Length: 620
Image 1 (cartoon, rainbow, N blue to C red):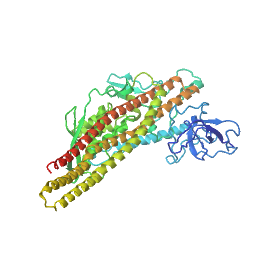
Image 2: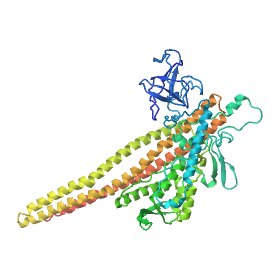
Image 3: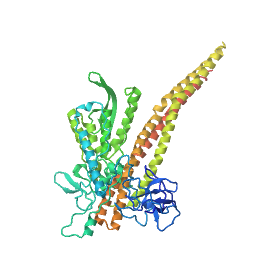
């Protein structure tokens, strides 16, 4: 019988996904197998919870009875995860974990394998080893590609009908699609073909050596960084894993390169040399099919063309889907939410228009999004035939997912991975805190606006009514010298009625714009966990490749290729973080200035009403 092992936690670990368990520093754990899979071990913590935890966060205790624990000679239960071997049995025997675990300030942990809900049968077939796993992954990816091709081959004649495109995830390249690529270099641009295009191929394996090669050297040259077992993770679906593993290959046009430059505060997107803006106005109700169907059309006028185009909400929705699919490490601003009823009510149309204006401002101010082809097509095309052609072209764009990273041109200076890790972790903490404060401010502002519209108006009008009742009571006195006082008190009552109306109308001027901006930023804040996950996944692959080099299972130049491609993702992530901070400072400065100016103007109007009432008493 295999013996359940005891381990001691070296660091705190907080579970974030289904199947993980949390552990505390110095906590004693029962481990069912000392063989880790993708850096994870399965076991039970001191609270009896069973699941996965990072192998680098614990230390296996050797020797009988060590660590206090109840392991005894009991046979460990069978693993709940098809891809995690049981306690020391045969079959797949992954490399033993390093003796010295890495601190939690190091690299991010790889995504967990999902529960068997998604995989009724084991991923590793008996006798199939990792080859069986890769074969099944290839079959799954081929099915995904076939489904996308089938969904994208329909006729565009129904473009004017209501439809929703919910596909926002690019297909992954087939495993090993570009494994024949040479060297371990990063995503540099090579093989210029003289037509304005660069043939880009990123290989993760070394070139095949000519002549006789020893079996040990052959094994080393074919070692690669493993694929994540969780094929539903953001790192996998975004194409980040395929790019890191060197499986991305495509042609990059000379004008399609996206440049990251080093600015005074670190990596940033290269500025748009031709900045522009776009106005959205005159939403109008249109009909078709002889009035059977109605919709709202928005007029867009880009400043760089001064040519009007008309777009419906579904066009914005389609564009948003294409952008999310194409740019895995860019925070594409969310468009206003859909609404099934009340679409033609004036208040809803006005609110949606304001949301689209905020969205458009963020799009045109982004150095990458503003210049991408599909966005320019959306802004400038006013011919139906050309629109459908551009739509098909965008939906067949090959430079999405993993291939998107091939379009990135980054500085040659390598990044300090520890500094990158620190900056990304700091930004992660920042976004979490900002998300909490944005939610709190949005709730408070909405509640305050509701009180102004309903409560304050009602209370001020109650005061005004009371003053008028007092004036009416005084009018029962027929003395002529009290007439002026009676009129002044009645005027004061009217003034308070007017002030109540001012309170009811004021949120549209100052609070609503803040709430709209907060809503836009809530969308950005929900984007960044996935962006950070892609970058963290890349760092994890670098750590894994370094371990393979230390164990003699991978050539150094191959690990350098993984490192270079990780730098590409890190440069883009840091550039997007910098842009977020830049636009955030600009947006909130402008919005707070507007809010305070509107508040001052509002209270000036209130003061004016009170001064007018006060003047009525001068002649009494």
